[in-house]
Image (cartoon, rainbow, N blue to C red; front, side):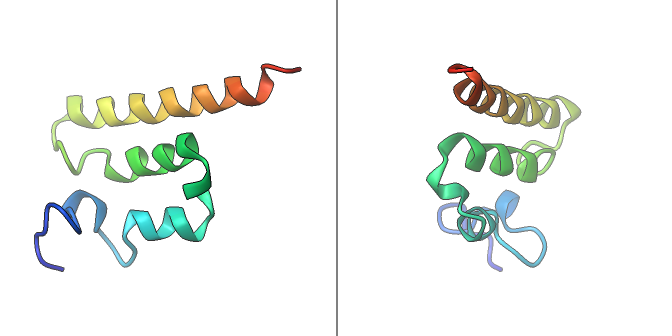
Length: 76
């Protein structure tokens, strides 16, 4: 795949499947937080190759996951 920062950024196009395609196939495009969890985990260490960048992406994934957990458990 060409290096297309707008339509197919390289940090989302590693491997056989593009992250957006996985998120849509799994139905996670219907849940903003869970879609972002997948997005940030998939790109961790690839958009920003430093350990700090990888950790930042994983912390963002955790933030979205925690938000979804809070939403699910707030009425319990």
